[in-house]
Length: 196
Image 1: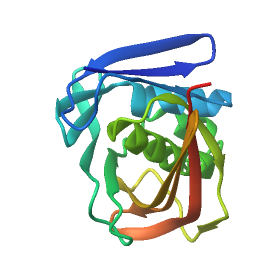
Image 2: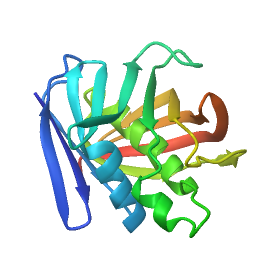
Image 3: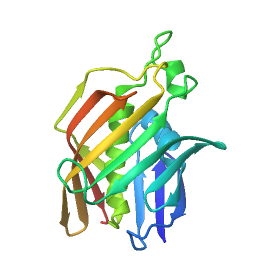
């Protein structure tokens, strides 16, 4: 069994995961801001494993999103990819606050989700450690996730995984699509898992 732990602020949530791709290890994802903490809780902490390639995101009893594909052979670079969707509900917490009378999903949440998916991919492959976003070369925004959007789809293509003593670093490119239209592009997302 894999133990996946997401640590946000003062609290953390962990659960056991059935995944034939990974041996027993622990993955801890720490969030750096209040918005990221809330997003991590809403978007990632509630993933429950259905099988080794499908993970559901639940809010109460309602499935609001899922990882719809994860593998170690596809993607633009043939190094693996992870694809996730989030069903957009106009009642999502951030629409009320960002911006007043002009609801838009914060761009930082879309970028943070891509970093977290890179970290999730590394954990899925069996790499242990505490996850940290280490950077991104460039991010391009050409659209927004508004309340009229139905589906936000994340596509992350792994470029490289580097292993050094006590650390694993994943490099990837990511995209966010709003109802099928590409609106965010991130080059060289970098995430590290650290055991020391």
